[in-house]
Amino acid sequence: MRTNIVLDDELVEEAMKISGARTKRELIADALREYVKTRKRMNLMDLDGKVDFSENYDYKSLREEQ
Image 1 (cartoon, rainbow, N blue to C red):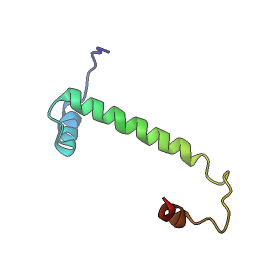
Image 2: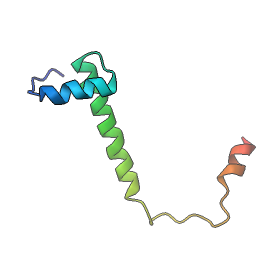
Image 3: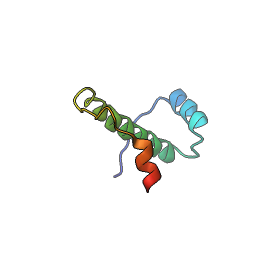
Image 4: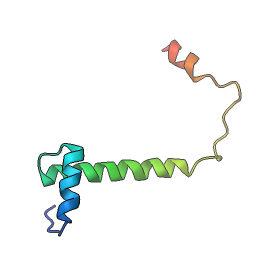
């Protein structure tokens, strides 16, 4: 999708230095992926206290069996 937007030049420069992105397109794509990942993680946190785990649940033993 092609979109024209006005971005804060200083913010873009700083983000490019931090991210290592070589182009603005790469920077925006990375930022959108990070945004989506963060939002999905936040949605999982909404389940806090709503899922009951067995007290003797041992995920480590399940990993060893595989």
